[in-house]
Length: 346
Image (tube, rainbow, N blue to C red; front, top):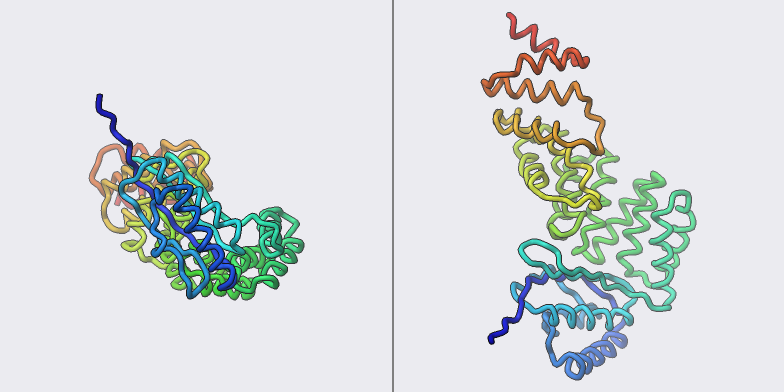
């Protein structure tokens, strides 16, 4: 009987900072010893590709391994978890997939008792608790005081400043985080939202694009950035540029626990309007059909607007049924439907 070893696609990305050349040298030696004696070199990342002596860090740019066993993936995550305990900041993600489906996923980050580590973890937790912004700021300041190159702490402090509407401070913190580690999507995404508040829509689009480039489709932030980039293009009347972002988003299947799940109806609706602007009327009708199918969403789209836009797209596409739809939209209170019916009678 012949046995076949299952192979999967693996994806890794992230960075771990060790703080000093001395710590870096110590970690590298322990890594080499553990690799040879525990894992027999059965890992998916090459030592020379990930250890960076110049910055005393372990850096994994977005790396895709087309074929690898589950054991190799697990060994890789285990040894990264081992060295993470000696890091002062950073994080690293690993995914094992098959035909686009996530089979295994793990996040590696420092969790030691070092002051900078514990202060950051506390600050990060508090940054997501309403009313605890002041305490979060104190903890994050402490993390930065202990390790001034703590990119994640700057990103979280930027988030807290954003919540407090300290937009200039938030902009500075996000920019500092990007300066220290420009492969993280979170500070680009955060800075883009600050720029929206400061009315810099072109700058926001550039940062949303960077958030997309520095993340992967397996991460929710990739799609959050896609969605908001498309919405910002629409605000600037850049419909051709918005269309690809909306198309990719609409074609993605999100699970109910994904934060993008409840934005599907809003994006389908905006996509439909963009397609109308681009005179792709039949595709617009299909988009508005999807809007009507979805029963929930993070939007305030009225039923009158849903029916009106679909009917208007039908009319422009030269399809039957648009008049009945417009009459229904009128009953639902659509002034646009009233105006279009009057125009069609002339």
